Length: 249
Ligand code: PGA
Image (cartoon, rainbow, N blue to C red; front, side, top):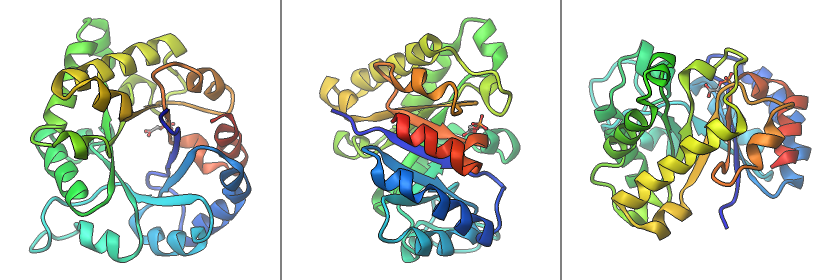
């Protein structure tokens, strides 16, 4: 059985103080939940988030990392730096980073390898554009993203990876994929993973859905066979909504 994961992606929202308040507000739900709960905060909010989450069931994640250990990379943050402050998870290759910050399948792969090497849990994102969906190349596109993201990663390491399927047309738009649409792609991702590795590995890896998941639609999505949780943006910024989603999981 795969333990469900409910991960909040705060994106560029919340100051450290606002983050502390939000984490305190979701603690009760997280501590009562059977699922894994993660909040991915902006870099500057990470130390206080780790501090306030300590002793609770909430894990803290970053939204990016660099694939090198150190050096002349102005503005970047390394896996060692995240480890040093107690961060456990890191989102890699979110579509916003691919679109606005030139992330490629190659950097996603390098970052995933680095995160695994350093003991961080990578939350690796994939997803198709509306144009790709309308041209019926969703499955090919996602399979390619997954194969490239997982390149040179062993089956033992792959089991530690969390995949997030986020159709780009559903992110921040209020237009969620239907339960069936989301499950269909998550199942296809699992098939791709089985083709790279084997059934056992594919059955171990958690695959989340993301894209306008909220307190109203989460129950349906989270009850689907191949959806092992959610990566939640907007609704993760509201303690009540996020707590409701945690309760469903
Ligand atoms: P959303 O964002 O829930 O606001 O659509 C999800 C994400 O981008 O991770």
